[in-house]
Image (cartoon, rainbow, N blue to C red):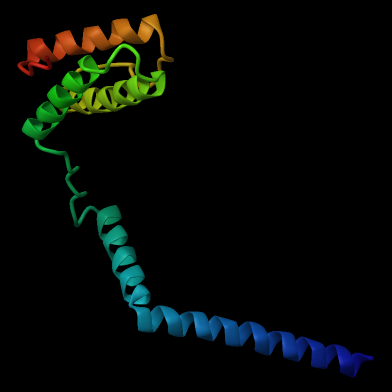
Length: 139
């Protein structure tokens, strides 16, 4: 009985060890191991303060403004008889780009948290006005 258990444990150990070795070999040959080590080194350097954190990447303001204007035109041109889903899709896309523009101009907003309806319409108008005062003409 004890001998059978030892054999079973040995087989289990060999299987686990071979799977671990195959995983390590896969990570080594695919280059993932090198990437993991590099990421770990970078994290340690940042934790010690030796390397500055990466700068956030934003789209250029001109591109965000062009997207806002394009989406505003598309939203205004939705025909009266078209499905509501189309209008809501354009509205959601417009709101997403409006939130992005507000973040770039440091305009506080709650558009992402408000449910559809009158409060969201009012907040959208407020953000558009604040962006216009900051120098970005939306419409």
